[in-house]
Image 1: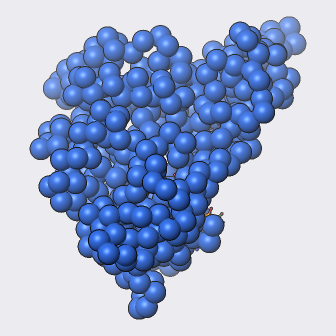
Image 2: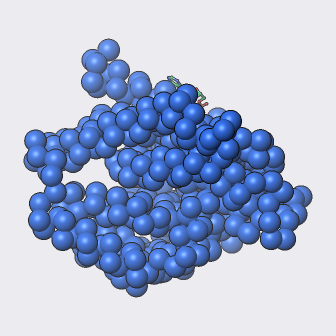
Length: 409
Ligand SMILES: Cc1cc2nc3c(=O)[nH]c(=O)nc-3n(C[C@H](O)[C@H](O)[C@H](O)COP(=O)(O)OP(=O)(O)OC[C@H]3O[C@@H](n4cnc5c(N)ncnc54)[C@H](O)[C@@H]3O)c2cc1C
């Protein structure tokens, strides 16, 4: 196994670094640095998508005929690492990283021609309608119905935990079109315009006070059959194909390294006894252990990359990476909170760049109630990061996958 980058790969990294350096404004970098959850505020994220799109880099993982790049797995990994190092924000994934792949693989030519360019330009912004109040880990239990009505379907029911539904103008939904046979056999994948009569979005206030997730109610919402992706009743296959992209992240370590460095820098500014927090042996020990865990994760990512480069299947190992990546991310927010000290206990959402709206809260004009920006943001990041082990397939479910496919239990 060779973990060194080749000369060509190093040159490729330089190229990407130059583009990022040129396109990333201070404003966009700051939005990423102080983002309270995985995604920064919507405007900054869309501004960044537009800049990437201008350089043909908004969706390098798409099929080439739809605007993707003919890159190796290593080049994709390098791109992800350079983005993290440059503090480029992540893009909202539901369109570009999820449903676009499904449309490219299962959609008709008309569906591809309409949606793919608009997803790239940001004119079409999707949210994901999979989970329901009684269907999460057990997704096949979903009940939202789609009843045929002439050339259309009438949709009724509810979706929950829908991220970015406030901003979205389209939602992709799994709906039940048949109630007989195996549960998986009566599910259809359909695209729904959010401005259709009968769609109501209710924000859910998260632990951090922000409203990024929502519950959506559908009351006899009329949707054309032309919006079905794949065949009616055969949406389960489409849904599972999409999950490969939702759960397929394998470049956690680059972003986590940045977080470790940030905490080190921050702890160097906080007084502790005669010196600074970073000199405290207990804190320094915790930080060193976290750094080692990130280094281990990086080596594992490179090993997987090396296997993928040889055409070997990554298989259930992506579950291991999801568990390690999200648990480490949670641990780092705990360390950041510890470093923030008393200022980290004050509820003070970001006055200029909230991750999302805070109901009934008026932010101070231009400064925090207490401490520096990172101290104000640390508790919100800590609270929001709890969700990392729940979404995209909970970590318990990932452990089940490992138990079955790796340990043979
Ligand atoms: C921040 C956030 C954003 C989200 N965004 C979206 C979105 O945009 N669109 C969308 O459709 N969904 C979204 N979700 C929903 C997410 O996919 C579900 O929360 C997740 O699938 C878990 O389902 P659940 O919440 O119903 O919990 P449940 O499935 O009820 O699970 C409850 C607990 O039981 C455990 N458990 C369940 N089954 C098993 C089992 N077989 N073995 C062991 N343990 C088990 C789970 O791990 C969990 O700890 C989001 C969730 C969060 C927290």
